Image 1: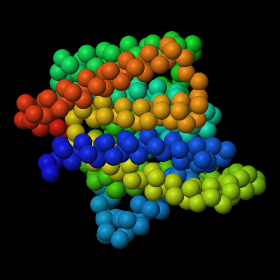
Image 2 (image 1 turned 90 degrees about the vertical axis):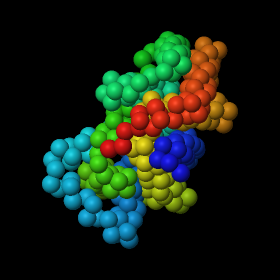
Image 3 (image 1 turned 180 degrees about the vertical axis):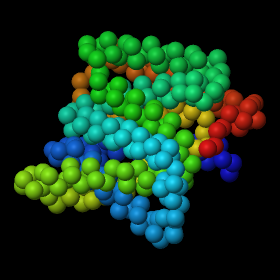
Length: 303
């Protein structure tokens, strides 16, 4: 299997898992979102540490100690990732799943824009049409909310920029994510230990099944993130961006069909425009892969 095709598969699997993780976080909705993020970071670090120890790959993190610029990029990626996680978990806990869908619908626009402006990737006419439909949809959805959707915008901006910094980190997926969790470990411990010292920690709030889910947040976090990191190093941003529509589509369906969040005709129109754009992207991508494989392969940037 060639690199680009492997990257596409990794991206599809990562985005699908992320979409259905809404169910996972909804089961923890009555716990503090900040403590959940702290637990998520610690659990992820424990799992990644075991993986690197078993595979004898801790030495691959040595560049972080020698290269301050690289450490800075990893730290920025870690901060952006934390912002994204916190906004998402907070929104799910407060019955704003549809707004998370809006955020992840906006995010591919930012990802594609970065691909064009920063990475110099080219956009075909059909892709421009799809982006135009998505942009109109975002404006229409924002107006229909009647307010600035801060959570959606934070989710979108943090994720688009996170993808860019991940692309600039010359580390394998496991090592890269381990570096990010190492940067975040002290703040995460503080978020967990301070409430616990006052009798309001996760252990005092969660049921037995919930504590099992909290302990497994490292697995739920690490698997799709490593898949995404592998995809980001193999797939052009102009293709990786549209693939992300898988996440908000799943979130939208969960919010409306499973958790019965209200949505009016205006919002439904906005989502329909985005789905039309996604269909155009998909059809155009399939045609391009058959007629212009060399062009697509040349557009792939592997750092």
